[in-house]
Image (cartoon, rainbow, N blue to C red):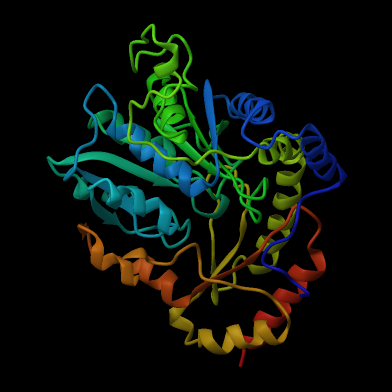
Amino acid sequence: MFYELAASSWGKEEIDAIHKVIDSDRFTMGENVALFEAGFAKYMGRKYAVMVNSGSSANLIAVASFCFKKDRPLKRGDEVIVPAISWSTTYHPLHQYGLRLKFVDVERDTLNMDVSQLEAALTPKTRMIVGVSILGNPAALDQIRAFADKHNLLFLEDNCESMDAELQGRKAGTFGDIGTFSSFFSHHISTMEGGIVTTDDKELFHLAKSLRSHGWTRDLPEDTDLFDPREDDFFEAYRFILPGYNVRPMELSGAIGIEQLKKLPAMTQARRKNMTLFQKLFSGDERFIIQRENGKSSSFCFTIILNPECGINREQVLGELKAADIGFRIITGGCFPRHDVIRFYEYDCVDELPNANLVHDMGFFVGNHPHDLTPQIETLHKVLDAACSK
């Protein structure tokens, strides 16, 4: 395809890392995963990192960790404030742990949660807020953090689409009590499949480590407060203390992650250079609503909303993109309450979610990759300019 939605960021280094793991004959989570976790935590400025097999699993054990805290754990029936646009597995763990969702609309330009609606979303049952930075663009994480602190709420920061983004000189994914990341094929670094949980809280770190591996004690440090060890080594080796999962990553993913993390700053710089060209070509054109940068975006992709006041037919435009061999897709997961699965949820909406619905009905995105995309972006502009002038 002339302009792909996703592209590989691997080179010889990742392939060599794979062969080293194969030669070691150790594929289960081990030394490479531990080294990647330490490197990732340091890069993000966090005390702890726990690697798992996907960003979705990162969200799952993050929510689970909040439910097993000793002090004021989340309980079934508690309410959680969430943005109306995100990926499905931002929401599914919340439902699976019996939480009620309160959907807040997004801003039309940033595509992130409209924090001016937070007070309207708050009720006596509110216990947590989920902040999501959409497609590389930091949400108002500082304001969400302040709101959570003011109202004694937990703050889960889903940063699966925005690795290496920054706000006020601080990495996105580090404002929440827990931050989650994804290292899926199309994301800012790729470990095939993979995800990471980060935190500065030792209890949450230990909970996440146990929940990642069956809910057992084997991977926990000696200084943990989650359980009191016993003298029976035979039993202790298989002692289960939490209703956990097996969401461990493979050693291959850890080894690849070590190499990808080295390349992340340069890859983000390349993405931002492409973003500059995209903004130059599309900014100021009333036909196109493009994402306004908040802080320092790591530019996952390029979003476009066709201005409803201009009478443009999205299906015709998408047909022109397809004819030009340009890949496209829905923005993240669209407006989540409009998906069939919502019938299983307990939820409310602050309002009619007009901006999220606009994104759902008139938006799409095209890819951004960590290499020069000048010919692709210039062609995209020509195709859209012609299609939207008809």
